[in-house]
Length: 175
Image 1 (spheres, one colour):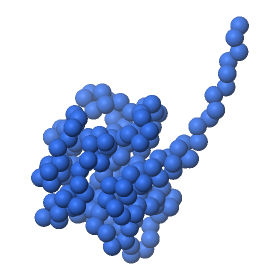
Image 2 (image 1 turned 90 degrees about the horizontal axis):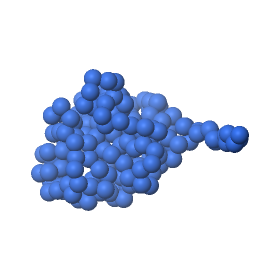
Image 3 (image 1 turned 30 degrees about the vertical axis):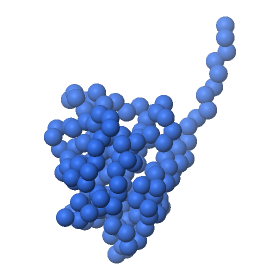
C-alpha cells in the first residue's frame, strides 16, 4: 500500500501578503506612481488620513479614486455568479464597496482577484460598469472577453487592463 505524502500547509497570510505586493507592483508599473500595502491588510485606520482603506494605498498626492481589495483563493467559481449560490466574487466586491463607502462616497471599489493555477502575474479585475465605461471612453479596447454581471459590474483580465493608458483613463475619471 503506497504511503500518503503529507502536503505542506499553506500559510494564507503569507500568500495574501505576497499577492498584495504583486498587485502593488503591477499597479505601480501601470500608473507610474507607487502603491504600498496597508499595514494589517486593510485593517489599519490612520486618523484623519482618509485614503487608508482596502489592501493597497497609492502614493500620497497622486490621483487614485479607488479602494483596492486583493484576493487570492484556492478556488474562485464564476459559475456562482450565474446561480443563486453564495458567490466569493460578490463577497470580495461587498468588502471593497464597504471600504469605499467608509472612507468617501466618491471612491470606487477595485477588486484584484485570482485563484490557484493561473499564470504568474495574471488576475481578474472587478469594477463598476460606470468605471468600465470611463475606460472605454479613454480609448480602452479589451483584447479578450470580459464579463458584465447584472449590468452593474464588469470583470476583466489584468493583461487587458495593463494595455490601457493610465493618463487617458485618469482624465476620463476626473470628468
